Every structure is written in C-alpha cells, then in structure tokens.
Length: 265
Image 1 (cartoon, rainbow, N blue to C red):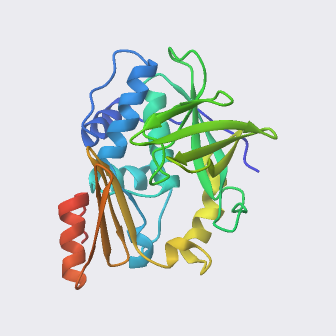
Image 2 (cartoon, rainbow, N blue to C red; image 1 turned 30 degrees about the vertical axis):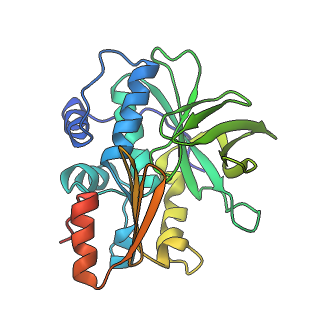
C-alpha cells in the first residue's frame, strides 16, 4: 500500500478560485466555526453527482482533473472527487487533514468493501479536537462531527451522531420515532487519494456498483434537498417531499441546469 500523505494542498490561487466556487471567503484563521461554515457552503454549492458514469466518461482523481471539473466546469462529483479536493483546500487554509477509508452500511445489514467511501478527519489549526468531515456522502451530516463517542446533535429534523465501535467510528442517523441507523463505518488510518483508485475504477464499471445502475445528482438547499435519480426529480422542502417524473432527456438536462447548475457538454 502507498505510504500515507497528508500534505497535498492547493495553491493560493487555486484555493481562491475554489472558495469563489462555493461562495465562501477565506477564513482569517482555521477555527471550528470557519470549518463548519466551509462545510455547509460546500454542500449547498457543489452537488453530489455521478453523471460521468452514465455518460461513459472516466472519473480521474488527479489534482488537475478535480479542479477542472469541480471549479472550472462548475460540476459536482462523488466522494473521492469532492472529499479529495476539499481536503486540499482545508490544508491550504491551515487545517491538518487525513483521508480515511469507510465502509457503507447496506440495506441487508452488512457493509461494503474497504475504500468504498472516503471521509476526512480534520485536526490542527484552532480545533480543540479532531472532527469528521464529509462533503461527498450525498445526504449526510451538514457540519463536521467531533470524534467523540456518543456525540449527537439535531440537524433538520433528525439526529446525527458518532459511536466508537471496535476501533472504528460509526456515523449514525436517527429519524424521529425510529432507532439509530448506521450509515458508514470509518477507520482513522490515513491514506493518500491514490489508495482509493482501484475502488474508484470499480464504482465506474462494476454492475454491482449502484452508480452504474442510474444517474444521480443531489444537493443540499437552504430549505431541504433536491435529488435527481434516474428520471425522477425529488424535491424536499421543510420536510415535505414531492416527486416528478421527467419526460425525456431534454427535461433531465433542464432539471440539471435549473436545480444543480450543471450544464453538460
């Protein structure tokens, strides 16, 4: 396995362009409040999306490709792209960031393979304790979670939290009236983004990958969330859910432009 590295950072010019992309100003210092603000701004501005897979376009994880796609073309991406690039931004802003492997909970009660998801452990700066950050999980937590066993808080009508379990950190959610549900299980072992390359290829090609089954785009909004899944557009506003079937490819592309700011060439 490639030796871990936690030093890759954007240049000042690249960071300025990235901050403009998410509508955020460079923080005066790397504080917890600044990190929370950047995390939320990213989720509101940059969609979680896997459109390139359905289009047959390769997803590359090198720095230039990530910047060209997310910043230059104003697209989104999935976990390896979004968390990989966000980590480089945070390092430029004075935080220490480790990329960590996570296994996603399945509907059958199991877990996906190692490296199926990448999350971020952020420390340093003026943080008093490490936190878990993740701008590439789709519908996850809105602000970073302190790496503290049993931590929980309310976010938009449901609880999110972390549990230490068998040397890992389990991200969990609980809807009102329901039990806690595991979403993913992360280690704290640092990895370079290159260690996720093999799984990145699998996500794009395997019939067992849910990304190869239907196109997906999802973005947080000030009042809820908008998601495109296949040909269905799902809009949640203050907890009220509406679904619409899109008639044709023209309608899909119009929805991508209107709701996600994505214009496909």
